[in-house]
Image 1 (tube, rainbow, N blue to C red):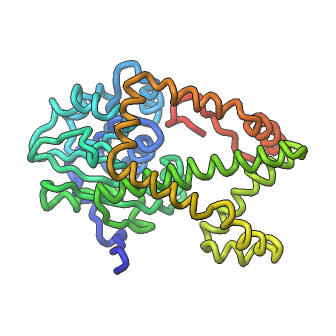
Image 2: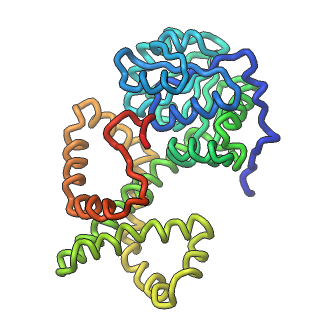
Image 3: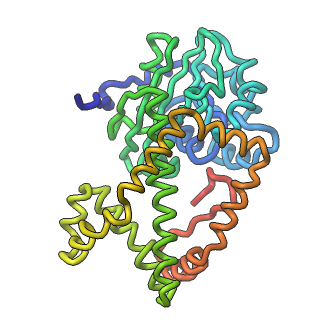
Length: 342
């Protein structure tokens, strides 16, 4: 059966009348949720640690900013908009001591709840509102009068009003304009991790780099390799986004179509799919999460080494040079606070 889709008519912002909403963290998702909710007429405050570089940005955006414990104590609904590996420590130190029965904890991703990194006391509702896109797109679409589709979930043991709260939050950030699907913490977490690792981030990044390397190693100019393996990927993704894989194929040449349907399966083959199944199993059993927690607590040595190696890849230098030749392309500041990312 198709999933039920909730829209504006199914959600009531009146749910938040006389209530205070706190967003803990002011990064990509946090700033988008906070700004959208504020502009939807909700009372929103921000919780940050002392010295956070996001404090000035949040205050410039018109928010009252408190230390995290005080924000939690003041709020009725608390969104934990922090990195997954930070959530448990902040929760234990600053959030749990200030929770009380009747409050609601909200997550935009289910990892910490599904894999028991956080344990919430009885009497506190636990919900999820997960937009299907990065925070900066959630914000941009809202400003344009549109909305990012989202998922909602309600954890076992929550009250009957928890779903109503989740739908109201989804409406406040604009997601019910597009459509909201109900899922579970388990389903959202496992499918999200798999998509990131096997297709959207891990799979796509590895495929682009491998294609670039193949052409350069064969003696072709790196600029040509960049255009063919990275730059034009956006054009293909946009076509698939707008009308599916079949729609993309309708728009490309006959030669490209034939190469697609005969050579694509040689790149992503039975061996690739078998590896995808292994990756999914590691996610389902919690092996990936345990590995990630161990890496984080161990000082992120391998994580940082792999990121630095990626930054030094020839495709990054070539791309920076070519993007500099396109003044119409929006330049992104990836060094400062995410909330001021523009």
